[in-house]
Amino acid sequence: MLLEKPTTLIPVCEPWLGEREEAYALECVRSGWVSSSGKFVDDFEQRWAAYCHRAYGVSVSNGTSALQAAIEALDLSPGDEVILPSLTIISCAQCIIRVGAKPVLVDCDHNTWTMNTQQVADCVTSRTRAILAVHMYGHPVDMQPILDVCEQHGIALIEDAAQAHGSECLVDDTNGSENKSWQRCGSFGTMSCFSFYANKIITTGEGGMVLTNDKTLDKRLRSIRNLCFGEDQRFRHETLGHNFRLTNLQAAVGVAQLERIEEILQRKRHIGQRYTHNLKDLTNISTQENQTWAKNVYWMNGIVINEKLGINAASFAKSLRARGIDSRPFFLGMHDQPVLINHGLFSGESYPVTTRLSQQGLYLPSGANLSDDQIDTVCQVVQELAS
Ligand SMILES: Cc1ncc(COP(=O)(O)O)c(C=O)c1O
Image (tube, rainbow, N blue to C red):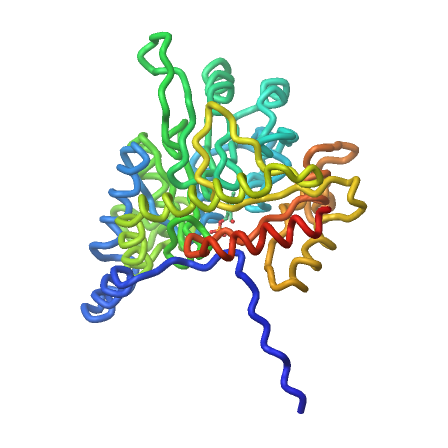
């Protein structure tokens, strides 16, 4: 039998775990607190909420369940509308459909790849109940226009900050002064959702969280996460819920990661700035354009290949792979998803910026433990392929 030649690719992202994660996880194993009760679950919820300047944190099993729980907590009715970007993960659209509501798409901005805030304002109808704002690759959505629309129309705001732990956005001071201040992503609106999947800035392996300042929502989210057990009679259920519980073992890793978040963010910013600098003169490649109102955490470093080069992201990725570099494609737009089209959604709608980014965009190795030499190698290969 022929042995396959070992290939070592520069990986897209590996979790950065160390002795502290090991020690806390070991504590769970040794104490037997490995399920969904335990000090690390409470600690992780409180400390992540505090980090994001929120009152309450409800941990869940992943980012998809965080979005599902948040949407269910809004008690939407069939026909209610939720505005979301077309360029995002399916989790954002499916949670809306699963409660019988209608996802309403907006295209994204050509430079930041985040949702087009002008289109958000134009999409509001009398049935709009919520906006789901999704920060992209570490760069925030421009939150001020979104906050204004929500306030003007009295609609809920859910932030999906799965890709933007620690990033910040410049918004008006809430005290009514003329000043602006930096506010952390995950602190805006009615609820914010996070994923702690292994490629996220901080990870619990699989995991997620919903944050809110609303005590009633906190209680509702806790109930949804835990099968809506009865308050007086545990096994008597008034409402359907889910088992979305995070384990103490996972939360232990999360606490250790959170204690190191500044170190992780510092590495992410360094990597992002090195990519931006190295790639800035390439005319056939564009990168996400940082805005003055945004503090990017560079979760992933995306590039968009100019059509003039005559290739799309999939073939560019193939060439990168042949040169020992792994990458991932951008999302496919929600309006191009067979499962959603078969659901009777988005017929005749077009989102040209999303379509272009889906075809021409991919992201490069971006893990926090990437060395400068690896980044420079990636940039050199990108430069060769893009000339
Ligand atoms: C923006 C966004 N939201 C939600 C999710 C879903 O998170 P999870 O994979 O933990 O279910 C992801 C996953 O990458 C994501 O990128």
